[in-house]
Length: 314
Image 1: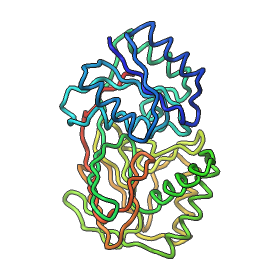
Image 2: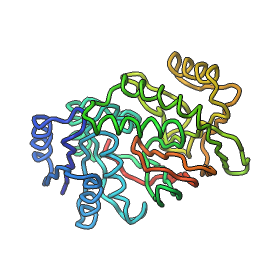
Image 3: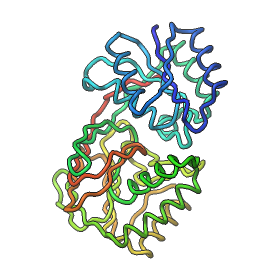
Image 4: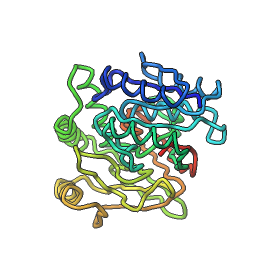
């Protein structure tokens, strides 16, 4: 088996020692090449080249952003292109994709699981989401593995990226502080979104829209945040949208999500599971994020479900 290990040395919990141990362990089982990313998009380019050269396995060692890049590289020619299998060894702060797959979020344990999957030939097909957007930030066509959204959550991602550019480390506290700042901005701007889903709508005056490809939506430390608990890699997309951003509404849903295992209900909430697509439009540009990566501002975006798009070593 030919395998490529793609390492993001800037990921939160990735270390040179951990990388070397992982590479040594993999090299005992496969014919291994290693790439350390040096620029944004490098992981995608490396994975795309591996697909062209006929590699059997591409292992992403980094955070969810690294996994997203590798997936987009593997599927650059589409979901039916016979792409290499994906392996994941977490090295970020949240590692949502690994957690949603039931893989260990600890890199040492994940390495052991990956070696077992290689030895026994175990894998699974997973569905993905795809984003096509247009607007002030340019046109984008991007795969996502676990979540995407427009509005408040994308503003939080933008704020965290700015803080990390200043040298601050991503942490639950940084995300919480940025979320409070972004909420105040949202209340002043108050963008209005229009949401369309199959056989329903349109739903107008929506304030934010989160789209899930699996459960959980994210992690806050070790706490799984579940917006659409019935969403999975084996079904369509989940939608969580709010028609109001008043403080009582936000506090009620935040308290529910933090204190329970999800399944929120109530006023001002539009929630659907297993939908084929979600289309969102806005008169003014709003930020768009996929898998915690900011794509920029858009006025039109469509999220679509792609069943069984990728093979993952488990």
